Amino acid sequence: MTFIPRRSFVAITGAALVVPNSLLGSQRQQSEVPPLVDQVPAMLDHILLGCNDLEHGIAFVEQHTGVRAASGGVHPGRGTQNALLSLGTRRYLEIIAPDPQQTSSSSELPAKLKKLSEPRLVGWAAHPGDLQVLAADLARAGVAAEGPTPGSRKRPDGSVLHWKTVNLKDDANGMLPFFIEWSADSPHPSSDSPSGCQLLRFELLSPDPAALDKQITLLNLKAPLAKNPDPQLHAVISGHKGKLDVAS
Image (cartoon, rainbow, N blue to C red; front, side, top):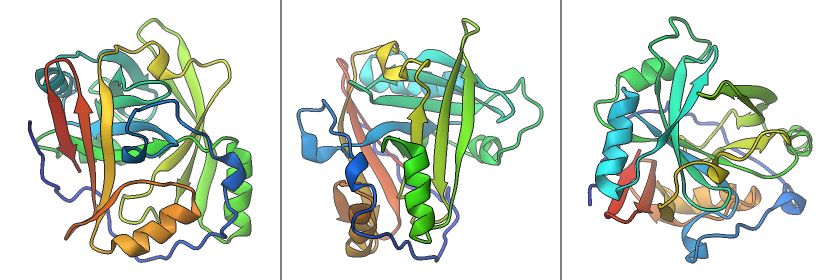
């Protein structure tokens, strides 16, 4: 079992997230998996494992779990490509890396991924329901956010998946997710990605767990919390070969 220590990946911000107690309460969706319900946020959609080379990231995950992720395709204009594997119903792992075929990008992510010396968690996504409702709730609460913003990915077979995202301006030093809503005509990636893995645990580590707990509770993002000198995401994924223990 390999544990990857945190290295700086996200910029530290000081803004406070203030959301009314009722925010998102009507949008919460209960997950059908995993058996250890309290170990994984119910609204978790996917976690992102960043690496500087996609094949290296795929091999890294396969080495520890015995499951090989399948190529997911490229993000046009974003400068990245990915590979995916299912972690259960409506839950998956995205291995994301720079796309060498895209020479320019509207995102800073490819440059950050190139600097990684080893694979590590770089974020997570939650599915709250209708993003238009979410965006309106955030605006009324005075919470700075961007979106809904359309996104897409061209798959190896030529088909294109579509989604929308909302991103909080203050993500609590990378601890809070971005929010995603998949287009009705796009299959959820967990449905046709390689299976055999399960997300056993996903937790948020923080120097001030109590303050972070207030933020995630107000957003209906229940998640395991633990104290740590630095903000950090931590996940444990199981496969038939063993477990992958990875962090940001």
